[in-house]
Image 1 (cartoon, rainbow, N blue to C red):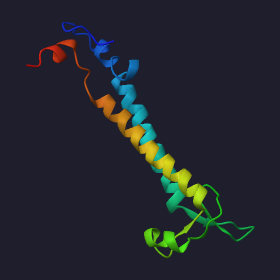
Image 2 (image 1 turned 180 degrees about the vertical axis):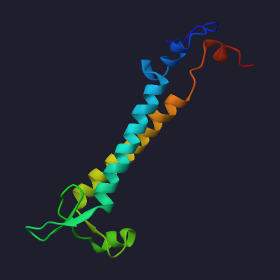
Image 3 (image 1 turned 45 degrees about the horizontal axis):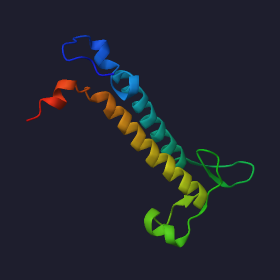
Length: 123
């Protein structure tokens, strides 16, 4: 749905990227995903508290934290605690997937759509 070369309609240009989403919508959605992933990572990794009933250490999501295995301590440091292998894998998938999709959407909103003449005029 690329605009024609002589079309000066900014709405047509704006809706041409990301399968019909406007460039500003792509930037807002991508930025929202990036902020959401940042909040998720903060709750999962940096926020810890002690449950008053059980006296167990927990992260921002309420997951019980345990001592980190010695293999993982090489990367995290000896004073870190974690929720387990399953949660580590899930957190990694959410963080990497969210960062990639958010950055792609945010950058898609930044790029201008190419007109048909840009593809044919290359010599």
